[in-house]
Image 1 (cartoon, rainbow, N blue to C red):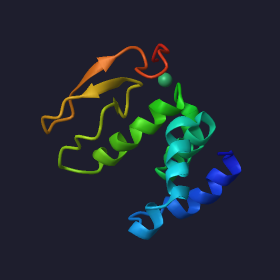
Image 2 (cartoon, rainbow, N blue to C red; image 1 turned 90 degrees about the horizontal axis):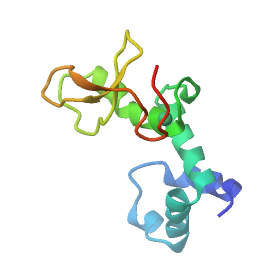
Image 3 (cartoon, helix red, strand yellow; image 1 turned 120 degrees about the vertical axis):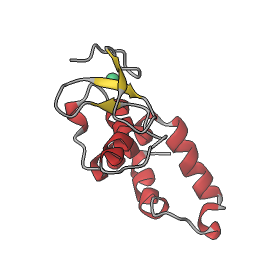
Length: 121
Ligand SMILES: [Zn+2]
């Protein structure tokens, strides 16, 4: 699937929840196939979600890091534990870590990006 078609379909398929008559189609299957296997489509979609979350992906080592920080950002405004958060960024320091889901704000610091391998700060 080319990116232009993917972007067009994204307008339809990104509005959740999708009714069955929308997702139970060959077109939706092709769209999801492109999301999972086409690098351009996938990267475009991740950037769209990152931007929607109010994060500037250019400030991070890679799109994946910025994408996985969306859940961290959501977690910071809430009391309850967000088990979907797999990486955290210490707000004041330029530190990244694996969050410990015990109700506190502790984490295990990491020195390299788990997705691209780049040295962090
Ligand atoms: Zn990275």
